[in-house]
Amino acid sequence: MLTKRLIACFDMQNGMVTKARQFQNNIPIAPAELVADWVYREQIDEIIFYDINASAERRSIDLETVKKVAGCVFVPFTVGGLSEDRRFGGDHQFHALFPVNAA
Image (cartoon, rainbow, N blue to C red; front, side, top):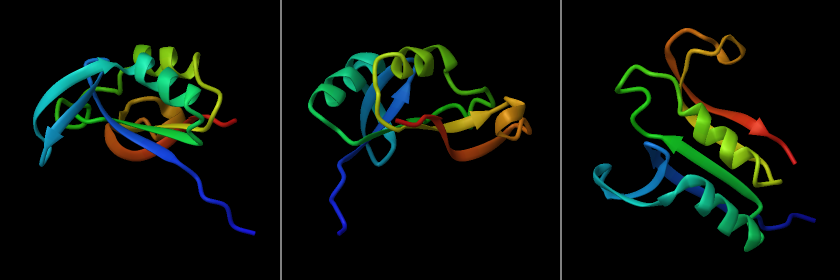
């Protein structure tokens, strides 16, 4: 039998979850690890963060924030953004999504 899953998707910028209209004028809402912890405690099934400026700024994703989030949630956690890490291609390309941890 198929079950329904709740998947939280958030834009992230400078370690903060943001809110925007049509991907412009992002407003910081709260630190990413606090938002992740909150939705985890509310029994979310999976969390996805998009490091929205990583590709445009030609930098790797914010690994410090990813580590903080991964340390406080125990559900599948995925991040989208630019990756210079050889494990994820290491070719300065936007890698749509890659898993950080799997519950």
